[in-house]
Amino acid sequence: MTSLHWLTQFIEVLAALAAAPLFVGWINQCRAWLQNKSAPSLLQPYRGIRKLFHKDAVLATQASPLFRLAPYVVFGSMVCAAAVIPSLGTRLPFSDAADAIALVGLFATARVFMSLAAMDVGTAFGSLGARREMLVGFLAEPALLMVIFLASLIATSTSLPAISEGLATQTLALYPSLAFTGVAFVLVLLAENARIPVDNPATHLELTMIHEAMLLEYSARHLALMEWASALKLFNYACIGFALFLPWGAATGDAPALATLLASIPILGLKLLAAGSVLALIETVSAKLRIFRAPEFLATAFLFAVLGLLVHLLLGA
Amino acid sequence: MSNLTFDLQLLNTFAALLLLSSFAMLSQRRVVTMVNLLALQGVLLGLATLLLAWRTGNGHLYVSAGVTLALKAVFLPWLLHRLIRRLGVYWDSEPLLNIAATMLVGLIVVIFAFGLAQPIAALATTSTRSSIGIAVAVVLLAFLTMITRRKAMSQVVGFLSMENGLFFGAMSATYGMPMIIELGVALDVLVAMLVLGVFFFQIREQFDSLDLHHLESLKEEK
Image (cartoon, rainbow over all chains, first blue to last red; front, top):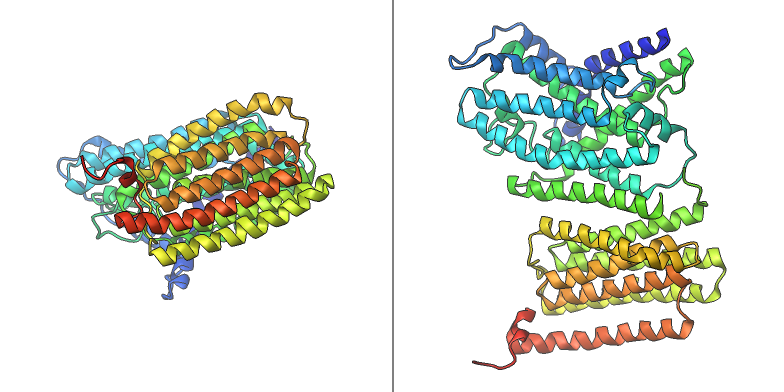
């Protein structure tokens, strides 16, 4: 490991922390444009987080230590995930700590803590949100694992940086299986990040909410960490998507030039801009599903992922 | 990793999309969308045949690609749309199982089909032999579509999709059947479709609906 690799790692985590709220702001902006509304500033998520950090935290009297611990665990696991995902370079010193399957486990840890904390205070909304989150999570996880298994089969490794590098450096070929799993991945991304067909991130008022219902009891720095963590989660998912389906542009190889590393930052920015507008478009054109339709939505994701796997095994492509 | 030539990759992509369209049909609730998907399947099949004809230089494959495009992508969907309009059955497709369960059963069917096709593919000598499994899967999925629907219209769509699968199977196993058989099958499908169209009206006149479960009992009353 050269110092350049450590530099890559450092910049990558820093970039994830800094750019995640911006990414959310960009999606909100695109959504507002598409819906003919005047958009909030791009920096609005930062302002929200800053404001929350300056407030005094209010805790419910029955809240256990778990309730106070959960935001740190959730935020911490998202930062760990950001350190493992190869968004700027593929030779990351931290990547040996967790392969793609452990990465899914990291997301699961965050989910479990979030749900436990939501149930901890004992409000109706909290446990309702937690139950729904677990329902969505347990259906989305197998689909995500199948997506990762296919990429691992093609690249013969379960380490995400190795997969990304393998896919980026091989000769260009048509992979129908990767296209299928790409669709599956987008569906999982929408469901896991509380985006529109499954959950509405912009409302606190409906009985249908999932993610927001779990955060209702949080305030101040805890809430800020939770919001930041969910922005990071979206950012991480987008970066996993890039690593698997658009792996070009990241610094690969044992000794990447400094120029490649520097070039990978604007390339990642461009990918995020494109992904954000596509996400906003998907959210604008689709309607929110009833909660009982969510299993069907996620079964479709699972179906796409398994079809991709089967097609790969049959056609070798 | 993939050492196939580009046209073979493209053919494989068409095969994969064909399988996907079968699944889309299986999960559809509305019969109008099913017919549109059938048209899409016809287009995919026609394009795949065209590509194969270009690849192998087989003259008669061009003809069958033309017949496929004209018949399965344009004429039959048009005929079905006309029937739907006449009979007013736009929303007429209730799956017996719920969609998620149907799709999971579909996945098992695909795995079964791939396993079934493996020995056949081992015997075939064509370069497209790996798609035989997909053809078998399309046939079985069409079967499943027919089994899980109760209305006559969606069953006919499933039947036509099954024929698509058989055609694709013949294409990948032996680069297409002899011309005369292919024309015969195309004509059969056409005639069957016309006769079924007449049947629809008869069934509806008799029972006031296209629900086939009325046909299960032989006598009027018991």
